[in-house]
Image (cartoon, rainbow, N blue to C red; front, side):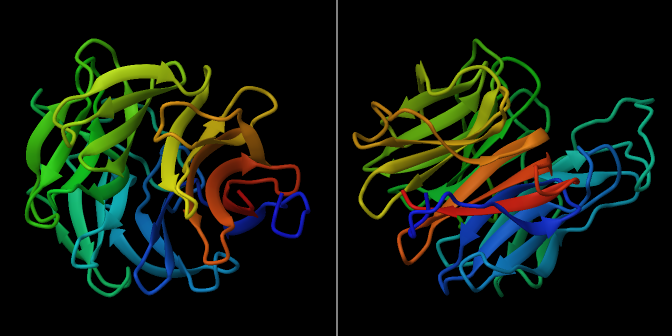
Length: 327
């Protein structure tokens, strides 16, 4: 429920986009949603945009475009966060061989993952510098797909998760120059194919990572992300990917999309640093394609969760939805 004790009603925040939103809270209180700007599941050309809200998620406006796509490609896969100097960082990959807007891809030749760009904004997402060349390939020699939040560790280095198509091709990379260059990859799991690694820093060199396997599987690290240990599943099949956030009361919030009927966005809480979790609660529903939530806590203690939906009971087309609820 929300602070008023009512069942929260999701809002259409940004219409006619698939989004896959990533929320970043700037130091001035602005909430930035980094999204894919087309109403399709990446099947045609499109770019990554940043939209901002200065009224706690009630309204949104376009700020800028960190990754305008090249012709016959899209830019759609993102990781985002703040550099230690406060700059907004977005690392963006995408796919080759994409047709113009509205046309169907014939997949001949097959699309290839594009090498990620490092995009940086010093003015809260309005203007951007783009480094197209510095982000490294994974140790397997292939471009990695960035995902989730970009976060600092105790050593001041930033971390980001990337994944590929093969077993052992998911890594956490580090930057010791505030996001300008990346390296020191640590493999998460050499034995299974996992996707969309959502990282979270617990503090004191301890990290959680939620990866898409059958559901959302937890990995942990106690050496600042150098090695990872597989833990228990946080969710069942078709309930992924995830996002983690620290609440003001100390609990950890896990948010994830659940595509088992009836579909929706589920949340769970941990009071012991991710060792155990509460039963899931539903904060929003959707129909068809959807999920991929990201959450931030508002000054009044409520949670703003953004997600995407192909449709809902109240809206018939792709959009970024938001819901405000009390934890």
